[in-house]
Image 1 (cartoon, protein in one colour):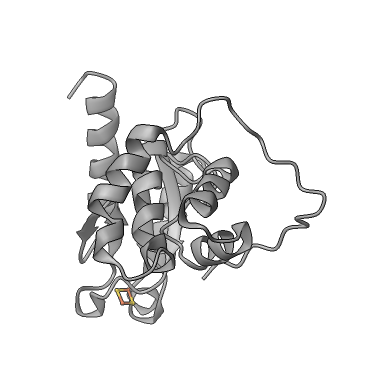
Image 2 (cartoon, rainbow, N blue to C red; image 1 turned 60 degrees about the horizontal axis):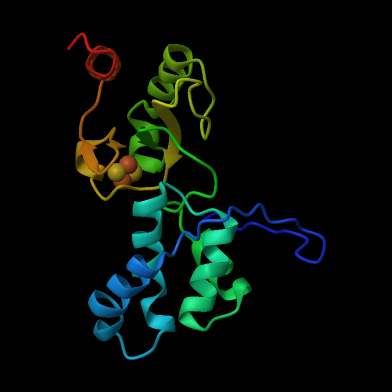
Length: 181
Ligand code: FES
């Protein structure tokens, strides 16, 4: 859970000319998502997922546009989005490595893995490498405590992870992304 408190009265929101919820995206949401829910408020989470899928994260301008689209207050949208660690409010890397830090994984060595990744990637948890490739995160229980320690790499869960596996995975990704894989 990540509550974000902001002084909304004085907060400046960066805006770009092009809306995040383009006419095309609004039409798609209206056709595919809204009919599944009784109220517009009930569609908030799937709409946020769609917007993040398109934009890569949820800029505040996009949150305002979601509020307008669903006829909610900006506070309702931000309160909901900031409750979930799956939503990002700043740009993230192409590969998001989320190491589980809950109790079973903690008991099975998650800290050694996180420490190794901090050194390997040269970033702290919740930071992104300067090449934009990796974001390191610590996450709550991934629902696979019997195969701890676990990590989520983008949307794929890896069980019984080891330092060696994570090391090889990062090297593979780097080689692939640099055209050597
Ligand atoms: S504690 Fe890590 S998966 Fe449950």
